Length: 152
Image (cartoon, rainbow, N blue to C red; front, side, top):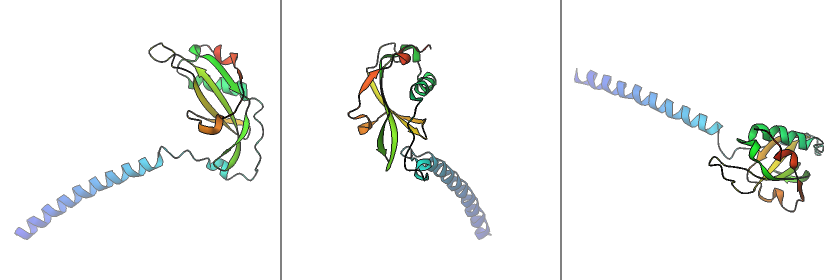
């Protein structure tokens, strides 16, 4: 009889352990899908066309994107933009527009001029990189007054 009780206790522990293990595996699986370093450009890697078209409407697209992206678009000052140039991004030549601006933070003070890189795929805005690295090296910035006139 003692063996039956021990078996039932062991199987109860096994069921509890199995549930815990399943929960841990589910969390790991979901976390793997959202890995922070996984910003691959798989769409671009599968493309057969090696040349990307120039983003002709890059300024209006930037304005539309930043109006929704920025927390306080009406506070932007010292805005400037560089005409998109082709740069190697993960082995592919993509058009990259560089952007600089200063805006008020949550405390109401200006945070300082920030630089951003905007990637274009198939002539359309794809994503903004908050840390452009060398993508914005040696670009010529021009004033971007349209960005400074955004209404909140």
